Each structure stands twice: as structure tokens, then as C-alpha cells.
Length: 348
Image: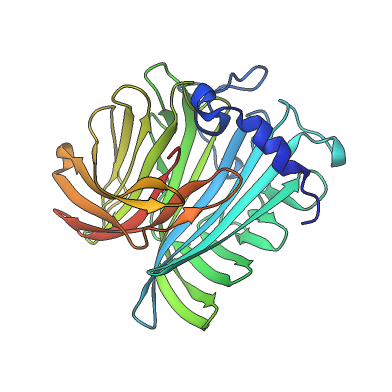
């Protein structure tokens, strides 16, 4: 796009990471709605936007295997951020949109970023049928299918992907029925996932087009103050095991031991929420990435589920050099469980 002013606005919203949580997500939520425990999520309504909340995202990652025998990963993310707790039409809307797309190979990491003002048709999300988009990047559902059947596309200067994703299991509500606590002080978000996608399609690299297939995972989250002011970043894991089980887990870092949460997803889709302290995350090795040291090999333990694995980055240089820089990339899992997944790390 040609209109670059949203970069300035988004950076102003970020403020100081250490004073307001990572990317300003610990700032006060004056006037915005606050998640409440006991609120039932409703679908398909909650697949759509929530303009009374300050921030939300539609976040899809996929671990893929190519017909060439190599492993790949893709990311497609649409963020909505509001300047005021209201909606509006056309240029009167306070909604800002930002999107990231990435394609990761064992030896390269391609990415692009898009920015848009809401209300003018350049970006948005609709429910029936589901459609999330910014410019020509699209996550498109089909009439009556909600988000269980999607097509996904994005492209950048040196990459592109087009995938079809079909869910083979139910939605997963994290925390207490989708109310996901993020700190000892009680900050929270609404958070659910569709972690059961099976996907196939094509990726395009500088050397050409490759047919791929694999597993996808969509995260949906919205809040107005999801972090405490002293939380400076997070380490987030979505892991799919060869057994058919899955796990989502994160640690929000602060000056103390941090705050953890995890969801164990059985092969039949049944879930168990694990409280703060149940998940143990230990960095094992770091890589020099974009002038900083970033942990790219981890020990992940969940004793309640006999999980003790090593999680290793497919490509340690999976740095997202975007308006808010962070690390995001596919990982391999070995140890008590074998599998694949995605790792996101912010605030390094």
C-alpha cells in the first residue's frame, strides 16, 4: 500500500515495551471492554471482529512437507488495533489493520507486512461466509462452514503460498471456557484455537513452485489489556505430536519467574487446562539473530502429561523484521513425544 501513516500510529501505540508490556499490550484499557470470566463464546459470531476491544488477531501457522522431501512452514496473521472503543464508517472508523505473512525453509526465511486503515474496504473480517483479508492476502471460508474449511493465500517479493485447509477436529477453548488468564494480577484475553487443520497446496520460492501438505493451527484472541505492565514478552508453543495429541503452552516473561499456561488436547479433541507453574520451559541453546541472542532450542516439560521434549527451530534465523519485530518459525519435537509445531518469541 502507499499510505504509510499507520506505521507511525502503531508505533505510538506500542510505547515503551518495558514500561507497558511488550508492544504496549500492558497499557491501561480506558474505555475499552475487558474480558470477563464466565462469558460464553458464540460461533460463528466470535470468528468475526470485536471493535469494543483494543486488539485482536487471526493467526494461522502450518508445518508443511514438500514433494521435494523438505520441511517448510508458513505464517498468516491479521491484527486489528483500535484507536478508540467504538466503530465507525469509512474514514471515521478508529480501526487499524496490520498483517504479516512468512514462508520458512531450512535455510531461508521470507516475510512481508501489510498495513491498512479500516472502513475503506482495504482490510477487514466478515462472518457469513468467513472472510479475513488485507489487500490480496485472504483467509476465505465457505458458506455454512465457519472456519472449518478455508483457503489461504499471501505473497511477498520472493515468496507466495496458496493452501486449502480442512479441520479434522473441534475448536479448542483455552483457559476457563475461552477466558485465558495472562498474569498473576489477572490480565486476560478471550482465546480459542482450531488446531486440527489438514492442509495441502503450493508454495512458491525464487526457484519455483512446490506442492506441499501438512498440518495447520489457527489462533483467535482478543482483549484490551492482555499483559501486565511488567511483562516484557512471551514464549509461545503450538505442538502437534505424532500420537495425535497436541499442546498449546506459553510463558509470559517478567522480572520474576514469569507466568505460564498450557492446554493439553487429546487425540479425540478433549482438552485439559493446566495452571500457572505446570508447564516448564528451559532454553537449551541460543542463536545470534538480528543482533540479539534468541533461544532457538528448548526443553519443554509438562509432567502432568508425561511430556519431556526438545523443541528445535527448523531455521534459527526466522526473525520477523516487522513494525513490531519478533521471532516466529516452525520447530521439530523429539523426546518423550515426536512431532512438529510452531514457536513464537517476543521481547528479545
